Length: 329
Figure 1 (cartoon, one colour):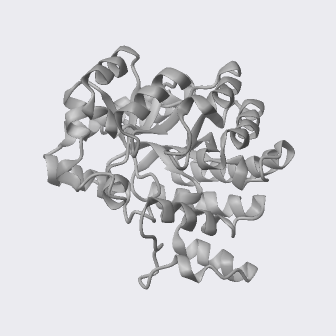
Figure 2 (figure 1 turned 30 degrees about the vertical axis):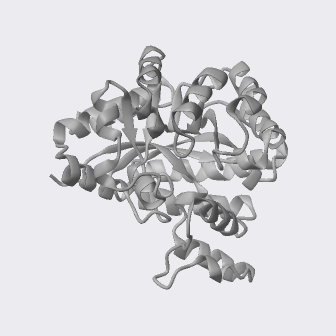
């Protein structure tokens, strides 16, 4: 199988986290910003653990200072992503990094991102949609402006609201207000949970925030009653195996629960999260799923069908993407 050429749907990425290190280094040089300590000798990003990863991520984001920076970032990311067969991508983007949560500034940044997305769709055949994201470790109050930005710009490009960041900061219910803002605007919802907080964090997120999807969610495997609840509520998991392995959320590929979750009937999808940080691509994820679990063409067709059905975009977009998947579906 040619895993690279296989058309793919990817639901769980962070726009800034997809930035190639060379791109961030170039911006830093243009702006005379010294962030040399965030890079390893091989040119990649250097971090010790998840908390340090968040610090390195935010340091890289200091180079992204204008709508034009984000337009260039979006093009660079989509060129790399499309090269690995991705035909539809959803990405988390935070108003905190795009104008500091100010609505007028957010709209300017968003216009630049959308401009790049339109150009990439025409040139590369990849569709990008955005999920506005509150940053959990910035605190509940900081998530409220992000949710307002989401609600005010919900439409063709911005298709949902979610929360990312330090999962162990606070409890899901602390952030209910921001999710209520987005829900009242009619937005689909997702939230990172169960990467570090285990089954209890997934359970609280499902019940208190009433999301349609869970980012990661792998901790749910340890609670059969929770699995049943996930099935009953038809919640989809955005699983990022390569990320989990590198950050040591699991001991390795062979111990990753994606197969057990799938075998239990849970709807799982596969994404790269922050690919250059975790030395992965969608091609690499597929190759490792094949090598570790023997997944074949039918498994990947089913994976993409699940992902497309769970995508937050409108039906017309889904129909357009489905045609691109036809060789694989």
